[in-house]
Length: 121
Image (cartoon, rainbow, N blue to C red; front, side, top):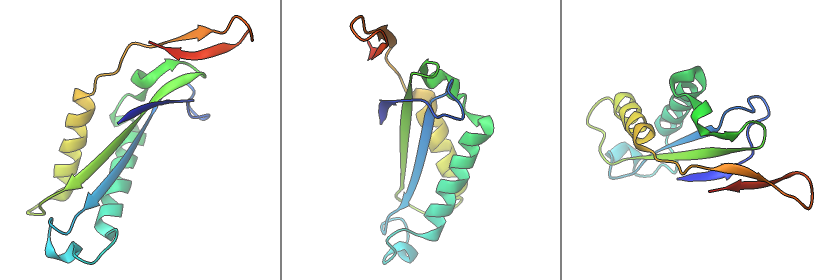
């Protein structure tokens, strides 16, 4: 999922990637009665740290520095826990980020107000 937002104040030339990992009861019996497992939260934190470390170039998500960017939401749903979930989730995220296609956008100046009107295709 992608949507337009203002850029983060700490990095006005980058967009954002927000990751969420869910381990459903179908994944393994130990997730049957847990609303959100600790392992799912741990995987989410790991993948978010991976993104923050520069593993993915978030400047690709910037439309115009300080004005508009894309925010990507990556929801990873595990259907089977038969091994290394960390590797499986990392590969799933890498594949999703590699395959994402974003439309060409530009910020158009608002002639009436003198400021940017917002992103346009």
